[in-house]
Length: 154
Image 1 (cartoon, rainbow, N blue to C red):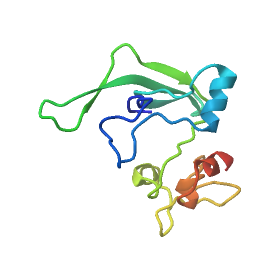
Image 2 (image 1 turned 60 degrees about the vertical axis):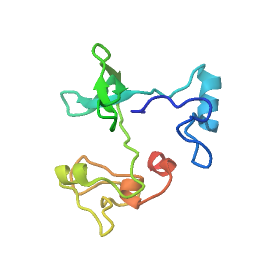
Image 3 (image 1 turned 180 degrees about the vertical axis):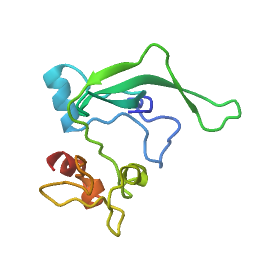
């Protein structure tokens, strides 16, 4: 999570009747905490890069911790990377789960992927191959708005 860890109680910044800004844990979080002894979520962390090996396969994710500083004019806070906190998390698969308003087109355009009339990336269900060799699409970016579990399942 790029942002700070939410407070355990309702924040004074979101008084009733606004939706309360506070830490929430669903069943999956609670099960992970019970089984592995800690919350799996990490806060104030930025993904900098996907790291690949000599065969072009992903082998890690480069991250860095960030802090949020209030701007001098009182406007939007500024994200500042914290020196000395960069690390590479080993990975052999990266799943990008995003898009309740449709997938962002930056990656699709950069990779030259075909899209449908609703801006979803074209990929046949069951095979998930896109118009580019070695690039696959699943979940929201392929089928449209849905639950994150579809992306994981596909």
